[in-house]
Amino acid sequence: MTSIVVYLLQLMANIIAIVGGTGPEGKGLATRWARAGETVIVGSRDAERAAIVAREIGAATGAGDRVTGMENAAAVAAADVVVLTVPFAGQAAILKALKSAFKPGTIVIDTTVPLAATIGGRPTRVLGVWQGSAAQQTAELVPKGVAVVAALQNLSAESLSEDGPVDCDVIVSSDDERAKQVASELAEKIPGVRAINGGPLESARIVEQITALLIQVNIKYKIHHSGLRITGLPR
Ligand SMILES: NC(=O)c1ccc[n+]([C@@H]2O[C@H](COP(=O)([O-])OP(=O)(O)OC[C@H]3O[C@@H](n4cnc5c(N)ncnc54)[C@H](OP(=O)(O)O)[C@@H]3O)[C@@H](O)[C@H]2O)c1
Image (cartoon, rainbow, N blue to C red; front, side):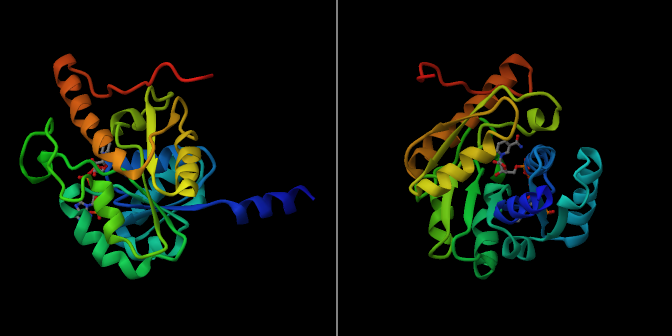
């Protein structure tokens, strides 16, 4: 009986693909979710690189075969939830390349921050994005039927790479309530994280800029993982 329940729960669980999952942010998220019992596909432009990182995460977390590596398009095609962790400079091109791989109903969680550093500028500055934010650009580029939610932009890779709880809230913004709920639940699988409803997707413009501020704070205080907490919420 128990095994049937586990099987049914697995059927209901989301498969998470992380596009750009070989970088510090994607690898950190994959590691945290693998530890929390999720099924994760590490995506990369190179299948072999993805497989190496997936094996590392599987071994480090005890998740074993629940973490696999694939070329980005195969990862997206196999997933219910796609997490985008590529630099802003490559965001539009990779989304165009992956467009035909998305299944209808897929949820895309966009973590991208359009830091000026992505084109050789300062990491404490954010580029102007015509659509308003990197996440809104993503919404313009994914196929119809795919929902975009902006989240996790303020969680540093450094804090994700550590074992302990993360001291940061995650502001979740989307025009799609189901996407917001799924992203909030996944964010809260990371110990220490509290998901905050950030309203519509356009709020991503503000949230992305906060990352540049956190980087400034990191530089000033010579630290690597300043975070954000919202106060005054009902308990
Ligand atoms: N690092 C942080 O602390 C942090 C915090 C919050 C949000 N973020 C956001 O998360 C994203 C990833 O950050 P990161 O530091 O992990 O970045 P990264 O190391 O520069 O890139 C992550 C991965 O993206 C892939 N990639 C690189 N250039 C690409 C391109 N032109 N097209 C397609 N894929 C490309 C690479 O994987 P393959 O070569 O294997 O394909 C790389 O390992 C960024 O948008 C960043 O703003 C980062």
